Image 1 (cartoon, rainbow, N blue to C red):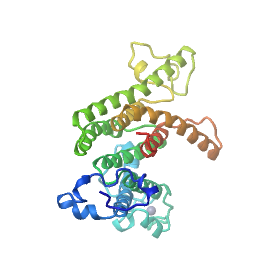
Image 2 (image 1 turned 90 degrees about the horizontal axis):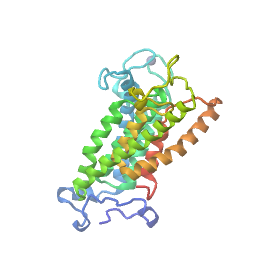
Image 3 (image 1 turned 45 degrees about the horizontal axis):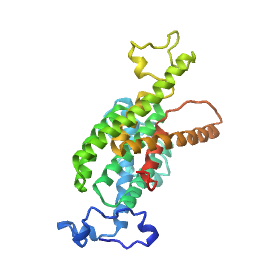
Image 4 (image 1 turned 30 degrees about the horizontal axis):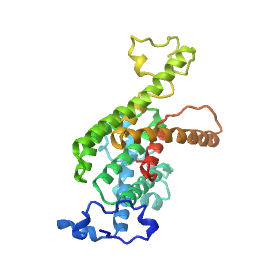
Length: 318
Ligand SMILES: [Zn+2]
């Protein structure tokens, strides 16, 4: 079924298109006939709007999750004057533009980052629906991309990746990915095993890199800012730190790549790691050029997130 008649060059990017609707149903699936008849542009624009709203929620997650605050209460407040932001002033992007990027009450500038994260999430969601069509797995990709945006920005700000995102995402992925594949007609068990193996390979891969790097650094007597701590010696085999504490790469990165492997499978995680190294280099150079400071360490999660999203969007990478 071809609910939407895209020109041939676009058709190939639209992937399976609205593949959730069986090919022989003539574009109808019980009560979904009307839905299926809607043009792709409707779903892409809807995904954009939902993505903007979710991006607005991600701003809350990014601010509050690392501080251990509730994600639902209290309502958003201006960080400067503490006035609660009314619902009308909290419409993604629109409110920012209407208020001229300033707080309604104290006129303090609101960071451009808020609408930027909303727009990024909106574009990612629209892009996913355009690329994969309306599909159970597209829904998983949408959640996945939102988790990656939050992890990347939190790591950039605080040099940590909350377990709620990495481990929480891993658990959700291992349950949700096989269900999405099963709804799509693939065997559940195979998808479940693929998810588990992906998580093990993804996490194991990055853990091995970090572990070997740490042992080489220790052998060379190389000290980092916080590794080992001041006046401390290198951890030994009998200590937990020997296995879990590394310079440069954190255990948070390892857990994040395990989550990515659970969604993308083992090969996807491997591709993510390769692309993340390239993205990390590019981001590092761009960062050094804008700030004119070299050698400032920052979290690896933005690069991992960029690599994982490239794997999702690049044709043939999955
Ligand atoms: Zn204010």
